[in-house]
Amino acid sequence: MEILNTKVNLNISTGRLTGEEVLNSKKFIKDLKDVFLNEEVRGSLAGDELVYEVQAYLPVEEGKQGGLFFGNSTVYPGRVDNEYYMTRGHFHENFDTAEYYWCVQGEGMLILMDEDRNIRAEKMQQGSLHYIPGKVAHRVANTGTGKLVFNACWPSDAGHNYKEIDDHGFSARLLEINGKSALITEI
Ligand code: F6R
Ligand code: ZN
Image 1 (cartoon, rainbow, N blue to C red):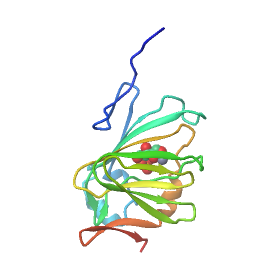
Image 2 (image 1 turned 45 degrees about the vertical axis):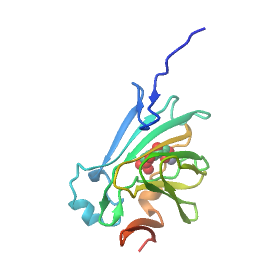
Image 3 (image 1 turned 45 degrees about the horizontal axis):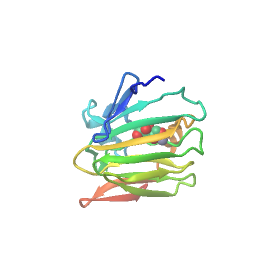
């Protein structure tokens, strides 16, 4: 019998993945054109400011049925005007595939929008577990002062549909109003 070490390791305190097969991607202010409500303010900010980064472990080919992918996302604290730094958000390409998110560190909000554009949000804080059903777009905003770290697990045939959100956005935005976060229907 062969006893092996795992190729990838997860630091369960920090949420970080290590290992040669871990993929890393970063989204800077300059990559997020038209994502935030105030495009003028976004354009005036330093383009190389890091908004979020994602580590991913894809042990099987993307699109293959039956496998699972694992991710670690970090959303940095900050705002574009009064809108919190957040992920682009997406539906899954394979529409009816679900996903788990769980928060490792920080404070934030998971914004969920169903196919009829109904919005709801779930508070994220260390240990919060979020089941994202199929057919529901998901995006994460950092409402705190430190980084927001969450891990995710999703089916390897889920795929990502960013176009729908690029074209139509979410039907509500998480803004800071009088020092408090509020989910505001698109103005
Ligand atoms: C995978 C998933 C997460 C996000 C990540 C970045 O299905 O939901 O790993 O991909 O948090 O967000 P997006 O992909 O919206 O830029
Ligand atoms: Zn997803």
